[in-house]
Length: 105
Image (tube, rainbow, N blue to C red; front, side, top):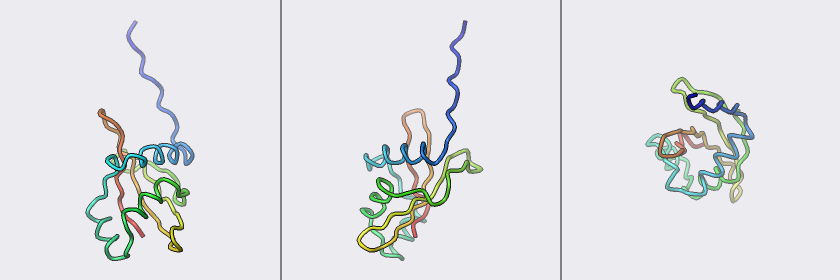
C-alpha cells in the first residue's frame, strides 16, 4: 500500500488567523511586496505597525482563495490611535510557509 495524501484542512478565518499569527512571530517569514512598501511610505505606516497588525489584528476581509492558489485575507488593528489594515497572502512552500503583505491602508 502506498502512502495516502493527508486531506487538506478547510481554511476559514480562525485557521487563517492562527497561521498568520504563528508565522508573523518570525519576521524573516514576512515578505512585504514593493506595492505595500510604497503604500506604507505614502500612508506613514511603519513595519512595526504592520507586524503588530499581523500578530494581533482581526480578520475584516474573510479568508479566500486567490486565482494564484494562495489564501488571502485582510486584517485590521488599532495601533497608537491609527487603524491599520493589512492585506496578506499565505504562501505555502516546501521549505515552509511565509506571508506576503500585498497592501497596507
